[in-house]
Length: 107
Image (cartoon, rainbow, N blue to C red):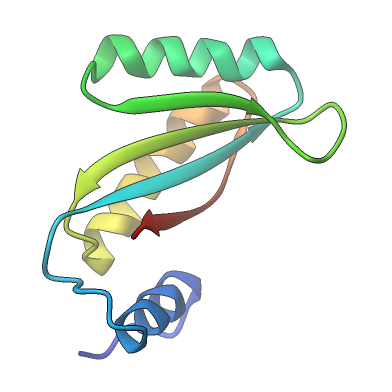
């Protein structure tokens, strides 16, 4: 399987090379960063209302005065699905003055 030549494609290619079965459902974690804890908590509350089954966690980042929001979605890590989910999260995060910071798979 080949992937587009971008960050998402590179991560998927590395996962495939490491033996991750990309045709099966996984817990895919999307990361978002915020300057204020209240912003991260507001997005988490919004997502819990919109998608109650989604696991969301607000954590302090290792960088001072930065907050992480981790959103876990159970899905097949297909390139197009990952890109679409990131775009959707990017629009939501912008409403709460945050931004996307990548994704990964819990294996």
